[in-house]
Length: 489
Image (tube, rainbow, N blue to C red):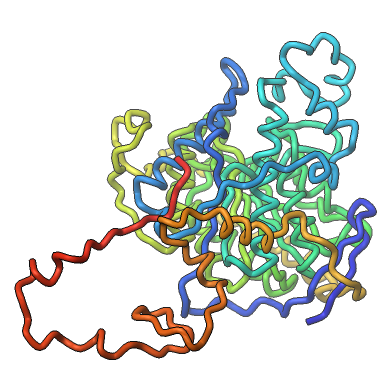
């Protein structure tokens, strides 16, 4: 394994281990390990009366995920909040200092800074703003470290995906860019990282951060024209070493599942073949769904979720993030469905009862129907977009490599955290597999379970009793307790 240095992102020296290029999609031979990051306080933040951004949508999604039982198929973690030093790895010191100081009570003393940092109507100052940034960014940083250490195959952080935030200003309801921070962490170990954005809005903040590098390719499928943020034209393809490493697919109103798939899959297949990323970050903004308060696409959960299925077919570490989405009930539906795709567990269309059940009336179903809106994306237009993207990809040089150098420290020390969890574990509760799988067992020990040190078993315990008694007598001295992994509600 080669160890490689990259010094090009904002002057930060980044060290990575070279991984081989991703293989083509193949049939799944082993169940994917999925990690899910959530903090119960995320749903308590409130942008203000009448604001379309509702952090409570993440809590709604979490309750659906719990009540569908999907938590049984993944490891659930509460991430450590990102601290000041983590946030300034991308953002400027004075901007993060402002976010830390800003409170609704002291706005009058910060008027000049609010203008400077674009904080105001769209991006208001609300109670707990800095803590909100810490949680969303902390989840993406933790997910990146978990992927880097090969402790998981898919990492999910629905609290993240805030793709509009810039280096020194807020934008589009976003304050800290957790995506950029997560990608910077991935670049310590991965030679090339692919970022894909399926939000209805262009992923301008992430594209801008990596516009001059060939280590990160950004691909955005979005509505373009008289629409926020107004960037992301087909001709925006990067500059300098990043020339051809920004891909934009500008779409129009009313695009359907079929039309979206007809351009998404061919373009992304070509990108995977050409760029050969060793990690993928997928921003799953749900405002591209039909019925969104701000978006005007006509996608259903099937069309949106097909993007998750597409990348799951590749044996490449995958980070799935949240993003936009302003019809809260549909956001919850979307991210629940895509969590089920990540763990590969089908879920019923009939919603289970949960704390937000009445929000899903009158259908009380998981899936939504498309509308009869006109599709302004004819096949001829989509074909032209595909050809333009293909032409740019043909001009792209071979997948880049970089100079070798020792790997830098991780933002989170997983070994220390796992040891702390073991030291603080309740002796009366069964340890989770994520702890016991890493425990070293002496080979001379004998066990009556399948987790033997050297596969030896006490054969006597597997023999049937010579004088069978009643089921009640056999089971009278043994009580089986099913201990579920603790889940943060």
